Each structure stands twice: as C-alpha cells, then as structure tokens.
Amino acid sequence: MNYRKVKKENIKKTNIVMSIYILIFLTIGLLGETIWNASQLPGNVNLLYAMSFTFDNIFSGKIIPYFTLIMMLISISIILITIKFGNKLMLSGSENILLNDKEDLSSEEVQVLNIVEELKISSRLRFMPDVYIIEEEYMNAFASGWKEENSMVAITRGLLNKLNRAEIEAVLAHEMAHIKNADVRLTLVVGILTNVMLMAVDFLFYSVIGRNSESKAMEQAKMVIFVLRFLLPLLTIVLQLYISRKREFMADSGSVEFTGDKDSMISALKKISGDYEENDYSNDRDNSVRQYAEIFSPKELFSTHPSIEERIDSLS
Image 1: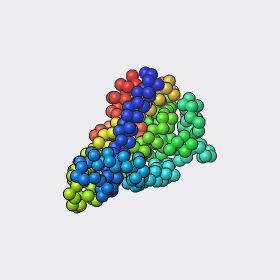
Image 2: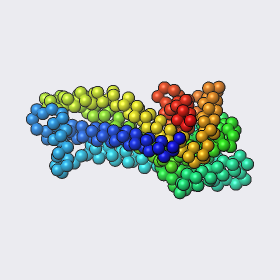
Image 3: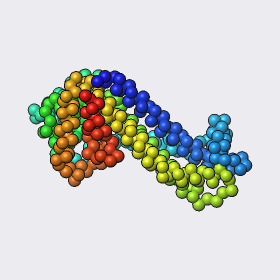
Image 4: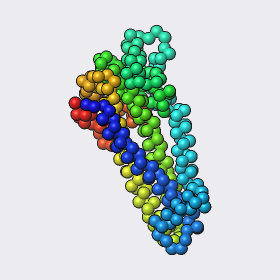
C-alpha cells in the first residue's frame, strides 16, 4: 500500500466534492440575490436569464450580494464559535482525563502519552496534541481541533483495556493522521456549509411560497426552491458521507505510514467491530456530536465510515 498514492487520490476526490459544495452554495446565493432584487429584473424573462442578469449586476457593482454575504457571515460565525468550543463539545457527556498535565500517571497512561509523543515525531506534526482518556467501556477513539495548535486525540477506557500496545498505537496513529490531513477542519466546514445552505433554502421557500407574481422568472424560482428543499438534504448527506469515508481510508493508510505496521491496524479494526457485535453500547454513547469523528461507526445505513471489510481490503 502506497500511503502517498492513497492520500493523493483521496485528496483529488475530496477537492472535486468540495468544488461541488462551493458551486451549490454560490448558486443558492445567486438564486437568493435574484429573488431579493426581483424588482430590478427586466420584463418577462426566464429564471436562467434573470440569474445571469443578477450575476452581471453584482460584478459590475450595481447590486450588492446581501443574501450571499449573510450566508457567508453566518457560516464564519458558526465556524468561529466551533473553533472556540469544539473540543469541549466533543468531550462533553463523559468523564475524561487529560494526560498532558496530569501528575502521578499510571503505567497505562504513561504508555498512551509516550505513544502519542512518538507518533508526533513520525507524523511530523509541529505541536503535541492534548491526549485524553474517556471513561467509557465501549471501544472508540477520535481526534478534534481546528488546527494542529489546538488539536486533541482521545481514546476510551474500553479500547485501552481491550487492545494491545501495537493496536493502540495503530488507532492513535489513525487519529494523528486525521489531524495531519486537516480532516477535522474539513468535516466541520462541510457540516456548517450544509446547514447554512439548508437554512437559506428554507428561508427562500417561506419567503416566496405565498408571494403572487406575474414574473416568469419568479414562478420558476418557486419551483426550483421547492425541488431544492426536498433534494438538497439528500444530496448533501451523500456528499458528506462520501468525503467522510474517503478521509477514513486516508487516515487508515496514514496509520500504516506512521507505524509501518498494517497488521496491527487490521487487528484493531477487527477487535473494535467484533466488540460492537457482541455488546450493545447504544445507551452509553450519549455524545452524538463526536460520533462522526470516531474511528468506528456501528451504524451501517448512512454510515460516516466505510465498512470494516472495505477498510481491511484497502489496507491489505
């Protein structure tokens, strides 16, 4: 397995999906501008011409794109709030231990901290992440943080108790790869853009649904908004899951690159999956916010992760 090849291929696919996201975001913005400035539209033109007319007026400075700017402002505001409180949100709902500043570490905790320090070197991260143990019996791990400077990795007590050292290292290397590849930041941006787009479409829907208009463009805009209101949630879910799954493949391959040990990664995935098959942790996993970031997702339908079989096949 060539980590750099896997990374290059998945980055290319991710960039394509992100381009689609940005295109959808700007198209919704332009649609909003067209409706917002309906009074300035010429005659009985169709929606495509009306949007083209609005686009030309925005670039010529005749129209200020207030609707798109508001969408962008909301997105940036949510991102800033999440940067500030994201790690706390990810840790909420469970008792946890920060190892970096703890005195009198147990031998098990020293081992975890040492592994992360070693992986920081092998992964060439510039900053040491905060390292947490989550006091939960289910087996999982996750990474968080907008950038390397405020990054963190966490593993559950259940995972620590049920994996050997090499397998724990493989799992932590997977999380370090997420930090190295800026996957947390990517997932956050995608999630926020999705929610802002859905809110924008809802706003447009309720603003035009009862409006009577003799304009051909506005009647067509109503139809487009109606279709978007039902299709956009499905489309964004598909795109989000596609990106998430590709980044999981990248993190798996990154784990092997950082440790040089694919067998331990495969073994860890099998043990984690098997543990979820044997135990029902549905009542223990209260923090739904961090489930997208964990190394394993027990959900099959609309899962944020590829199947264990696919991941093992990719590593083989």
